[in-house]
Image 1: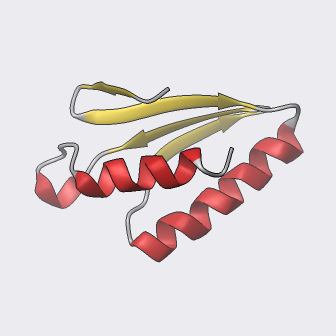
Image 2: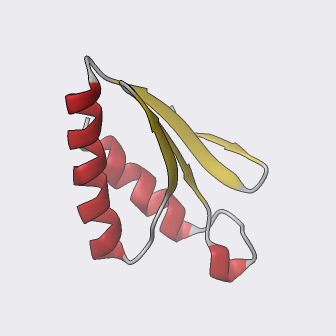
Length: 76
């Protein structure tokens, strides 16, 4: 579930292993590139943490963030 806090949408994902986490990140990267909206994220072994905010709108949550979050959810 996405959480909105401090002008960011954030969510953590957990996978079976590093390979699954990395594959997920690769799929998200293609989505982000197609939407020209890129996440702040981190990966630690089988966990991926994603934060979305729109930098050119003063680091606030916008429709672009909500759209990318929905697209990411469809990958799971």
